[in-house]
Amino acid sequence: MNFGLERIHFLLSKLENPHLRLSVIHVGGTNGKGSVTAYIDSILIKAGYKTGRYNSPHLLEPRDSIRINGIPINKESYQRVRNRVETVNSESDIRATSFELLTAVALCCFDAEKVSIAVIEVGLGGAKDATNVFPSPLMSIITAIGMDHMEILGETIDLIVKEKAGILKPNGKAIFAPQIPAVQQILVDCAINIECDEFIIVNAATWVNGNVRMYLDGCYFDFHIPLLGDFQLENVAAAITAILSIRKHVSEFASITYTHIKEGVRDTKWPGRLEWIDVSSVLGGSHQRILVDGAHNMLAASALRSFIDKEFDGIKPIHWIIGMKDGRDIPAMLRLLLKSHDSVYAVIFSDVEDMAWIHPCNPDLIVDSAKGIHTDMFAESSVNLTAALQNATTRSKNDAGMMVLCGSLYLVADLYRLLKLEA
Image (cartoon, rainbow, N blue to C red; front, side, top):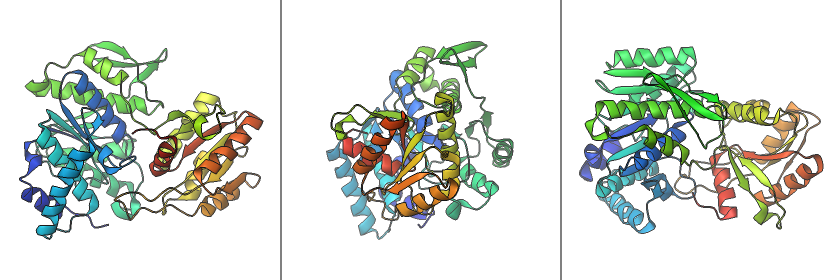
């Protein structure tokens, strides 16, 4: 993959610089970027603003990365803008990458739709990511940072944090979600060195009687979040802190109320992340739920296992359906996920549209790694996702266990397609 900002800047200049006409909240980090953008988007929609949201990777098809008021842009509009961007790219011999093309399409769509605000998720890294084209975003947010994409971002946490901190801007405002101390200090140093006007270190919210509580403006604020997992306490806190900051500093957003915040958070949707899905339709009518999570790195795998242990006391055997991207540290991730009484069904995911560089790992590697961690573990390669679901269902009914599908968002997408679900 060829990173850098030269091509995207050249492409956008030929498209009349749509990014310079947008008010932007820019969200980077390792995990939690998507849910933070989803919370912010939902709150702003409740407050009556017209929003654009750009997330990556897409779930089912590239256009679901681009949303207006929370809804994927329609096929006709997407294709019309896509054709224009590709024509400019070809005629000017820019040779933009597929992600740069999609980013340009998103920014052109948001400009054409005259959105009040665009919420933009970083694709990979930060400093050299194609989304890092905004000279003065309203807010830069950095979510939890961990070791991921080391072959691109660097082999040390120091290098990775500095790359992700590349979205910070001089005289800009920044929100840092809760981090481990070493990461937090690097972020603070980066913010000071680049002369950010303001940076806020967020404290996670807390659980109180099944709801979430934050201390805001001198009093406690309780609300419900629909997304699962303790890590959402950090994500929702970062999102709300960002909303309150732009409400304070940008007069256009002064009308946002706590009711908008509460209702926006309550109605947030972020598919494929700690989501319970009914898979009965592919099991001959046999009612069965599966926990689905796109967990694809160490930080996410640890959070998934923690959620399972907290919710189910670590007693139930877990029957895992796992597919991973080639290049992942499979043994390390499986050591976080698996226990000796679990079982594993390894699968491959489908080709990913517009991402020819993404390849699934050989499922036999997952099987061998699982058996190497627990010698008594049942693990097999499945011919396809349907077979994996059927076999895992049979085993879960025999021992009252539960099923979990994880390892890659691209595998989650295959399940969505199989069940004919929408993104």
